[in-house]
Image 1 (cartoon, rainbow, N blue to C red):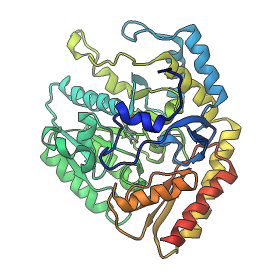
Image 2: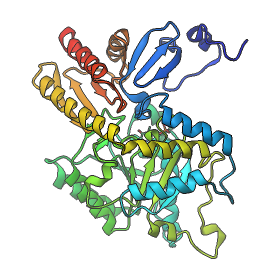
Image 3: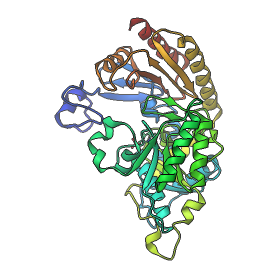
Image 4: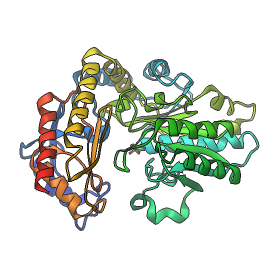
Length: 427
Ligand SMILES: *Cc1c(COP(=O)(O)O)cnc(C)c1O
């Protein structure tokens, strides 16, 4: 078989492929995609789809973005790869200098990985060893109920979604979960956290700042989160902000953590970091965290590595992405999306089928006034409803959300809103 053959992908896929998040006995065959550009995808039959979730919040500057493509191909020709233990390279050094200037001001050191889960995994290991290096045994993590931090063991432990981590529950790290803070429950959640801290040896608090993505784009209160971070800081519990979804402009600011006065000790980045071009992730930390690993004893260093850490092509993509993040055209699109989402939220807010319509930055979500299983048949109906109309959205249970590439055109965005509006009137 010709390796460049793009025929009958969907059918041939079923021969040997095992897909992510899929029950293959009941799932529809995977759709073969042959081309992507801007906010559009094309399947093997030539049908066009609007990528309404930027392929899991990655391709924010559009698929096939010329600036990114050029940066990566130049990099490939100059230096494809070199191991990152004992060696360094310009893309990593340049990226570190640029990113440290953009991240919340207490972030000083970057540790590279190759995906989001392992960025969280490294963050958790850093936090545990941070205390260990100080001669303390702190064995407990604090996390939010319904959080999602990835699918490796540490990241799964911090996650609260049972469909992902249920079968592994007996093998996870010790984690205590607290509710997300709202204006109403803020005092109670703070009291609960105080009690958790008083009765456990807590090493770190792992949280998605302000928006819980996989939970269904659930928002929580910035002052509430700030209060919780303050309590952790007092007890030297490291605050680990998982900005893998929220990072690089999704919530309006470059990073959601900028909304709180108390800054995280550690930040996890991936997804839009490389704008969909290459798998890469970063675990950034403060000088104080880094210093805890300095010693004449070798074993106090952080002995953690993935072969493809700091891949030059990923770093080149990330650097090119930063050029775009703050460029005038992208800033204009970010502002437009924010305004358009607010207007659509105002339009659907009072609809009898809608509860809790909301937006933050370029994220817009609404909950349908009906209960349905996260991956049940009603949810699948919603998914198909949009796909039939040439729109890729992945409803999470009864939550329909839109998180489009910044470069989506006004007309493409209107088409998504119209389809949601139509859905509300056909339910
Ligand atoms: C996607 C995601 C992860 C996991 O990243 P992977 O690259 O899929 O391993 C972790 N945390 C958050 C908030 C995410 O959105």
